[in-house]
Image (cartoon, rainbow, N blue to C red; front, side):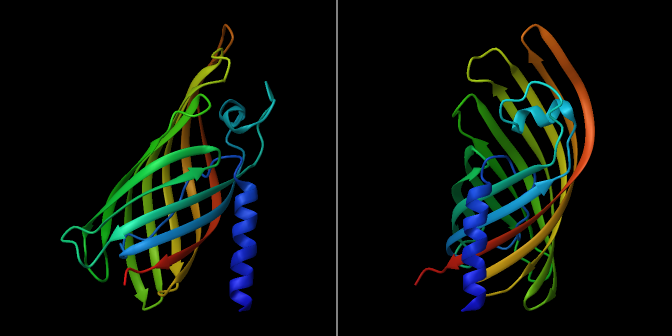
Length: 226
């Protein structure tokens, strides 16, 4: 009961943090049949003044700061009953909605892997897209080490159309999935190499590159098909 209370508080906190983006959402490569809900909270070290502008409110310069973010996702999976297990779903990464698909290519019990893609929806002038891979190493029946490399592409313009820009992030995400039942907790860390180019009025900013890190914690809830 206490664990459920902590999980509920965490989800409320993650929902409140959905204002900026999570640069890495580390997940297991294994697909389970049925519905899955995941809430994640993250914090990233300052990504550089040029990049931090994308995830700041009312900031024109000196925007470099740590970035708190959240990701809320729903996915429906076809696991053991499918020759190629897959999930389809949708979610909200910060303030950026997306649809998502993932295909498990290797169904090995000890070292499965797969690939996925997120497609951002054009809401508010900005979109975030991702392509990624997932790879597991099974340690015990309830613990898996996770590696999620990927590429994040943030693009668009400010609501008035005056400030277009792009951010490309090459991400190396690592974590551990703890739990094998209806609830899974995943602490994670990530290293991001980001490249930013944008325009503020007539002023060109970048391209400029920066390496930064992030840490996160997610709670996933599964409901299997009957």
